[in-house]
Length: 247
Ligand code: NDP
Image 1 (cartoon, rainbow, N blue to C red):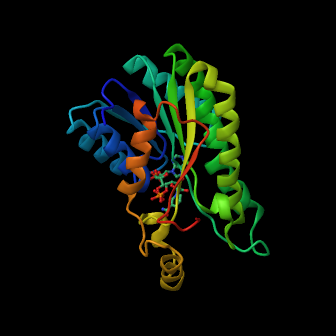
Image 2 (spheres, protein in one colour):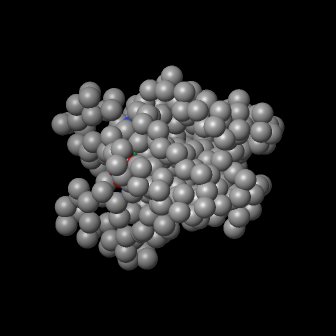
Image 3 (cartoon, rainbow, N blue to C red):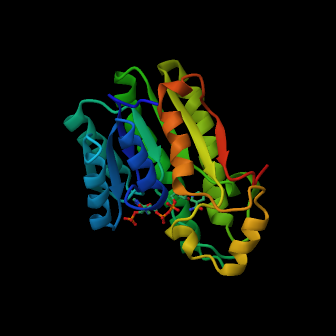
């Protein structure tokens, strides 16, 4: 797979799956800009590692919930690198609780970070991608956006919303050769899932036909395919990377 000549933007690229996506895209020859909210040191390390792959890297501090900041980030990338061909909406959080105990703050924080952010960045890249006569947007969903999950009504709603958004976006922008797809991971080993207790983790593994958790690279390989021209006839699709969990 070859991504040479593509300029990419990955939101939340300082840690976990986003970091893995940024490194994978850069290994395949793409220039990659990442955003982060708090982890400046980690983000700068990712940039160094990407530059070690012989491509351009950039880290920008930007809260993904901030609508005008998204436009600023996209403008910066386009001004510096000339174009933007790939957007990966990866930034996301969990604030789990049963509905009886879930606060309005829990609901708003997760919906705004995981769903509004996708609107913010997808809207911001639309014009540059139209100018580039094409582009690929990859939104990181979750299997719980397909199946639901007790204790994650806010998170599941955000990820289900992301699927509806992606399909609508794909229908609106296909005539401009802009594709949009969802990658829906199951249980992947990152700091986000470190928070889960042993019992929950074991139950998840038992429910997974492949019998194990996934690695971030197993998600980023699929993202790289969707970013590449090898997937040129795929749009509006949801690809699960979940060891068969939501089959
Ligand atoms: P991590 O918690 O390991 O990393 C989250 C990343 O998102 C960090 O880079 C963080 O930046 C960034 N981020 C969080 N909030 C914001 C914000 N407001 N603005 C900008 N950046 C932000 O999570 P994962 O890598 O596990 O998850 C990445 C994506 O994958 C999420 O969308 C998640 O929902 C999804 N996913 C994960 C699964 C898993 O099992 N791990 C399963 C299914 C989906 P900073 O370092 O600055 O805080």
